[in-house]
Length: 96
Image (tube, rainbow, N blue to C red; front, side, top):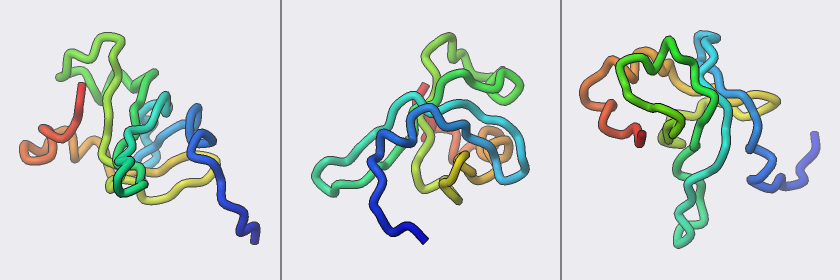
């Protein structure tokens, strides 16, 4: 197994899917906490219109919390975004 650290820029351009296999969007940028030196959000573009129809996203995209990420590989898997979008407590965490 390759233990070489990857640059965070390698995440840009990767597709994001829910753990149920639903396409969510594509990573366009990252939100960083420079003091803690961690990624704390993924800025997504090219969104799945079916998931974001209730939100007036326009061309802006969304930022999802990095803690929703379940796995990173050739694609990025996140917790079931459909359920998150419908939940009232989590909805405020999406930056549109």
